[in-house]
Image (tube, rainbow, N blue to C red; front, top):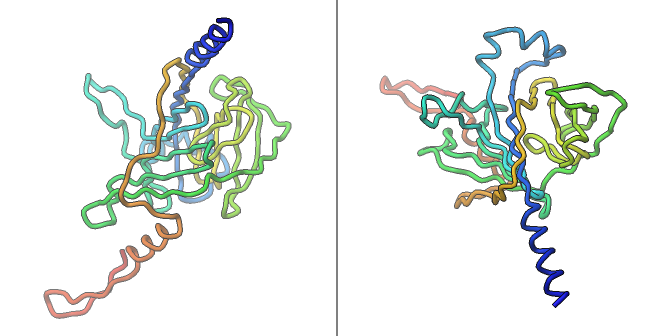
Length: 244
């Protein structure tokens, strides 16, 4: 009887310990290097043209990073168009720390005829973070600065907080001893936390189901084929070459 009660109490403890974090991030993208983002963000035209709000949902080692939805006059709508980066719009990103897997879900990938869905799956990147002694208060949290490089050798700067003890962050970045509050990617992308909510809601996070699954190498080849110059004969009988 004692064993049954013990098992039951453990079950209740596990059931009530489920915690989900919902973090809204603001993204800014510039196609040339930015050395001073504080000065750049004072430009209203820049803020209007290159901003997007993204929602990070985290639960027990799994996360999704999707375009944030807001309520406008009681109607569901997207606040801004999804930001494009490196000619590709990744609408949704998923991480699973348990299986060390990562996926970018390209919904209605527009360069393809009929805008097909593509799920690009790969191994979850593991970053060698260098935690520095620099500290700052960002988005209301006491943060430390960590540095690393991406798979192409680009510079990554991440400010994380120990106050939120989950090793998560925007996009494919993770692995620090606390939530990433602000992220700078190759001096071209700035992402910072706007709001954070912690709930007891047990949200299941799974990779999207998609018939069109590719590796990163296959997806890169597809992009090259889609955007390579093409020669055709116009209605006037002349030959033209256009790059896509």
